[in-house]
Length: 131
Image (tube, rainbow, N blue to C red; front, side, top):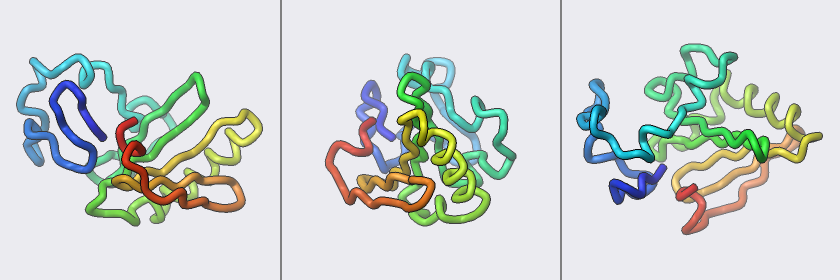
């Protein structure tokens, strides 16, 4: 994911991330970071397995559009296909289908839409990972 205020591009580590420790500028982090709410913390039905440091997946939601996006660590591009992650994505796709929502997986610049009955790889886009 990108962080505009830090000029951090998608698919790269933030300069302020200390692996195993956390954000080195947490108390002074930019507004964009302060306003971010990780789906792992927001969605009550997720187990400890979903913690981003374990799953390699960061979840974002858009409640207005009824969308859920799974941003996958590009160094583990198939993490989303493992269980319980994939089954959960399929269940979410089933729930949002009638409400015109979508389930999206983003791996670097690549996007995959998850439908209840199939997955559609949209390929790569220079703008995919910026949202």
